[in-house]
Amino acid sequence: MTTRDLVSLLGLTLGDDRVEALLTDFSITRRPRPPRGDVTTDATNRQLGVDLTFRNEASLKVRLREYEEGACVLSALHLHGGDRPYKPFTGALPHGLSFGMTAEAVEAALGKKPDWQNDTAQSVRWDFPDHCLFASYRDNVLRRLTLQLPVVPRAA
Image (cartoon, rainbow, N blue to C red; front, top):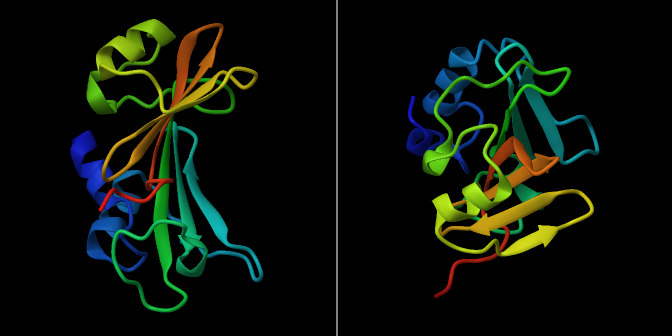
C-alpha cells in the first residue's frame, strides 16, 4: 500500500471495505469503537509501528464528505519511528520522508515552511488540501509522522 493510498483512506468510515482492508493489512484484530461519551478511539499495532485514530463524525471540524449520524471516521494515521513501546514502521513514508531525517531535511523535502509549530513539543504541521502532516522530532531527528484529516477548511 502506498502512502497516497493511506492519505486517500482518511475520512472513510469503519465498515468501508478499504478501511477494513487497512485494519487487516496492519493485523489489527480489535475492532475500534469509541467508548460511550468519548469522541475518539485508537486501533494499534505496536509491532508494526502504527496507530489509527477514529473519530465520531459529530466531532469533526473539517468534513471531506457527508456521514451517517454516529459514523466512526478514520481521522489520523500515526507512523512511529521506533520509540518505545513501538517498533519502527517499515512502510514508505509520505512525501519521500524517512525516519532519522533532520527537521531541516524534512522541510527541504516538503519544499515549504511548516504551517504551525510547537517548539516545546518539537512538533510541526504542514497543511495540504486533503490532509495535514504532523512531524514529531526528538533531538532534531524525525521520530513520528501523523497523517490527519485537514485541521483547517479548504479555500473555496
